[in-house]
Length: 258
Image (cartoon, rainbow, N blue to C red; front, side, top):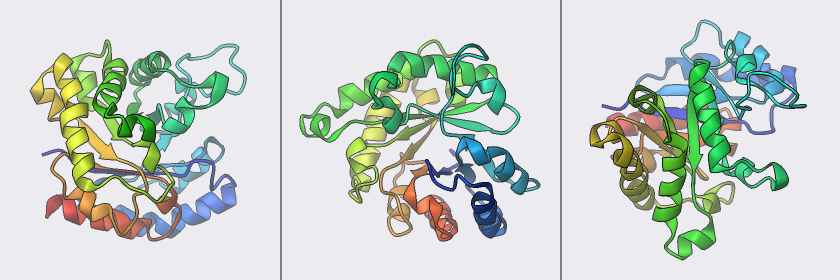
């Protein structure tokens, strides 16, 4: 059995310490009481320390929203894995919003470097993959997403591959209110994501790696995604900024066990 994992990506919200800590304290107890699912909060860098302190003595983990692959150096404005290793358990890598940021866009190659750096510093990567609407409509999802997965996992040991979390996020469904159907997500995760992992690491590893769905996930549709056999959780955006994120996690946990 794969332990489900639901992560709330705050993106560039809750950036003031007082606001972030107040919200964290508001949901802390109820979120900590949800069983059967790993719970992860992904605050902005500016409030990571404060939220980490607010989440002490709970089972709620934290994730950074990205990082550089170098430990230190002349990389103005970047965050290194060394800076995160004492604050976080996870780090999001390759989110579509960062893959498409002009001249600083993350590539498959840079994401692979970051995956290796994460493991070198005790961080578990949440690797985001996903196609845009044009690719989806052209029938290119399998080739494109499979390529992203293979590139991210390149050079990993079997033990490292087993620890990875993958988040399948069709770009056309992020923040648009238009989610892929649970059946579509289940098929892409099973056929494409797990298929690509199996090519390099075998079917047993592919069936052990946890794969989330992300893209307009909310309290009303989480159960339908979590009921799919290939879906092991969700990477949640806007819906993680509201107190009913706790209810979303409850419903997700209930659907995954039921």
